[in-house]
Length: 284
Ligand code: NDP
Image (cartoon, rainbow, N blue to C red; front, side, top):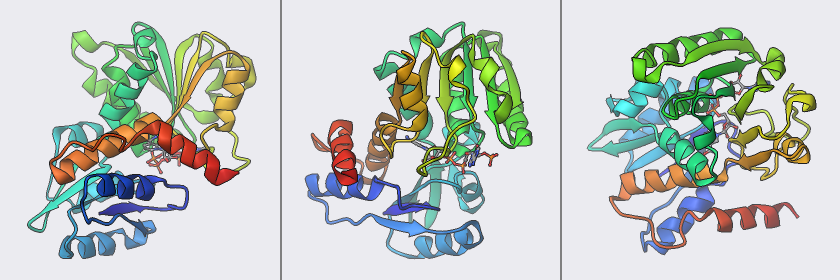
């Protein structure tokens, strides 16, 4: 098993899975497979040929990897992004465990109910943002604003979400804006979600003005390392409920574990509290 992406240095998935396999008494390994886009096809072909049960997919390959799969789940098809692949008899099956993990973590932090009938602003239009957009749709906001650096990508995602939201039960206004113009949209939003990779590197700062980060706005940042991103720090300073992505990470990882092993994780595995502690001690 392993993680396919670029860059991978920040990822805690290897530690998470090795701990879970050890607790389950499984002699399995979980490796990092760092690969740039031009090497993805060759890497996937080599994983297919080896004795590998599956792999996770992260930035920037969640959409591109679909081209190499034999089949995919309805969730992967709906979202248009795959973060978990299972290999059986040389056949690759892809799914998306980010969507359910994101919604479950919003619920766990009591951020989901406040979305109903309200505006939500989603930053990003990559693989993770796609899962978030469809997850948010299930919470019935009145409006979803998708903001991205590449406006064309935001428009494409908005169009896909609009198509999915066509049924009267799910009527929601969906719009796309450039990331640098997102701040005023946050004013009347109940929830701001960061699904860009801005914040991974020290000194990274989203072009979001502090003037709009005010309670009762809730802020969810998918980044989990560092545990407190610049966005979370600023949002908390202004009284917002602000949560990082570690709970989403552990929930999607636990789902991958179940898919690969057919078992429930052992008690203590995929525990965000343990992982948060590891990450903070690592940074001291
Ligand atoms: P993608 O590469 O598919 O998308 C990256 C996104 O970040 C795009 O919207 C991109 O905008 C934006 N972006 C990148 N650099 C910049 C920049 N300098 N300024 C503005 N926008 C930028 O990655 P994913 O969608 O897979 O992942 C996004 C983030 O979410 C990652 O940090 C990842 O670690 C995290 N994540 C966390 C999960 C969790 O469980 N907590 C699960 C999945 C992801 P553009 O389109 O303009 O390039």
